[in-house]
Image (tube, rainbow, N blue to C red):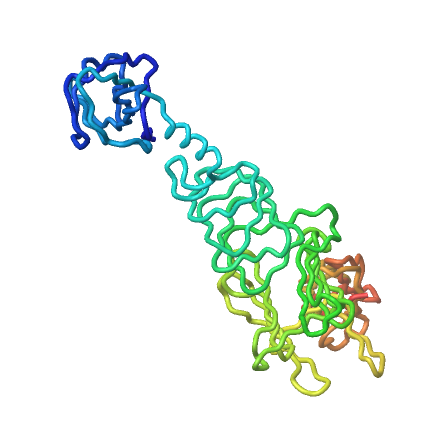
Length: 407
C-alpha cells in the first residue's frame, strides 16, 4: 500500500537559498541531508516564526523542491533567503491519525467499511479465498461454487435447488426433500440394526403409514398407507429371495410370458410359464422349448409330448392306481432240454423291486406241460425259466411275454 506521507528521524534542518513569493511551486534549500527519499513529505518554511508556512514536497532535484503551498491550513506567503526550513510532523498528521482511529469506513485505502473480528456486520461484494467459517449462518440466498470439504453439518430446513452436486461420501441425517434428486454413484445408509428403516415413502393425502419401506437388511415392505404394511419381499437364505405373500403378474395376452428360468449362459429359457398357466420346458442353451403341459379344457390337463413318472398315479373318483411298468418279450431256444434259464435286464432300473408276471406265447401242441416262472428279481433284472413239468426233454423255440410293475 502507498503511504499518504513519508517521514525521517534524521532530517537535518536547513535554510532557503533564495527568495520566493507566495505563488511559486519550487524553491531551493541549502541541504536535504537525511530527508525522506520517497514522496510526499511535509516541510515548514520560516519554521518557528509567525510567517511559518507548511508545504507538501512532491519531488527533490538536488535541493530544488517541487511543492504544494499552504498545507494543513497555513497561508502561502513570501519567504526570504536564509529562512529556516525543517522536515516536520504537523497538526494535519495528528488530526489524520485521530480521525483514522475513530473511522470504520474509507480507511486503509478501501471505499467500504472496515471488517471487525467480533462486530456484527453485513458484508457485500466480498471474495473469500480458502476461508475457515465456524458456526456460520447463511440467509437471503446467494451463489456458492467450488469444493466444500471436511465434515460440514447442515441443520434446519435446508433446501438444495437447481442441480447440486455432492461428491465423495456425504452423510445426510434426518433430512427431507421434495422434487427430483438426480445423482451418480452410490447412496449408502449405514445402520446399527437390521430392522432400522433406510428408505420410506408416504403420500401427503392422509396416509398414516408408510406405503413403502426398505430396511437395513434389504427387506422390502408395501402397504395401502391407511394400515400396516402387508406385503413383503426379503432374503431368506443364501441365493434365496422370498415373499410370504402373493406375487401376481398381469399380461396383455394369454401367451404372454409370466415367468422364465435360465441357467447362466443360456440364450433360451429352460422353463417358461405363460399368463394362462401353460408351461413349456427345453434343454437350455440356444434350443427352443420342446415339452409342454397346459389346460386344454375344463378339468383337463394335457401334454402334447411324452409323460414319464416314477411313482403312482391315482384316479381320484374310483381310487384306481396307475403305476410305472415295463414290458418285454424274451425268446427261449430249447435244444433237447427240459428247462432253460434266461437273465432279462430291465430297460430302466426301478426305484424298488418290481412285481413281475410272465406268460408263454403260442404253445405248440402236446406242450401243455411247459410253464414259465420268474426268479432272482431285482430293481434292474430278473431270471425267467421255462421248464417241462413232466421232465420231458424238448427241442423248440418259444417266446415269453413279461410285465414288471413298480411295487
